[in-house]
Length: 344
Image (cartoon, rainbow, N blue to C red; front, side, top):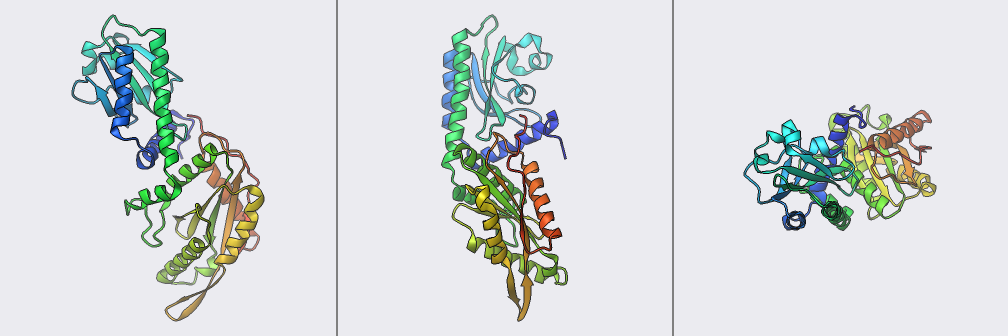
């Protein structure tokens, strides 16, 4: 696994965050256009544009008075800047070689974040040679980037859990598990970030349950019978969960339950209820099979700005292992109540 603190790991985290933004909370084109047009006017710039992080070249969202082609590759190099970045085009060989720079002497780029707190793009202006930005123009450009962040945040908050789920389910098979009809691994992971971020912004706790079917329920079954057991488990959980809870297929015989707003004090009781809900016989093709499952629970009272999903799921995995070692068909609660955020 790539270390998220390493530049390459950070780039991957940002790209994943950008993908979630574009899927669940992207702005209409005209909203981006208003920001770039205002930036050009405010700075009396030759051109202005908004670009998003991409692998090789920046992804152009909108632009004002731009030549044809892709924008200069600034995002991957400059998203680590805390605020406004200024560069004389002649001082940067890579920037100087870009076709857009023939008529520009100065580029100003201001990073902006998505609702999760990841830097995903730049608001840029290009000025003619000999021009400079005043202090008020620098402040105004920074304020416009903050305004763009606010619009992305409002769009994100307007996307409820059911809306997010519908967005993901509209694109099968990419984010939908064919067997259960639930969000698949990537789909439920996207919903995990969405759910956690909403809880952080709303100052609510957040919990989850990692569910594993017990081997006694599946090890002697045929492939088709085991698939039927997983379908039965998914159906029982869906019928039990609260409005706003989310369920997805995590891997093989594991399901992931997201429990936004549920505090640690209530979590073990809910976990025990889910264990009881799953326990019982399943009838398939005239035969009866015994279903049971074990749960690993994690509850967070204090939510950090950027979720470390890997650390959260590792804690759930450890709690699940404790449930299995204790005899299975039970829930265990992780002692972890705070997951530190990723560096961005």
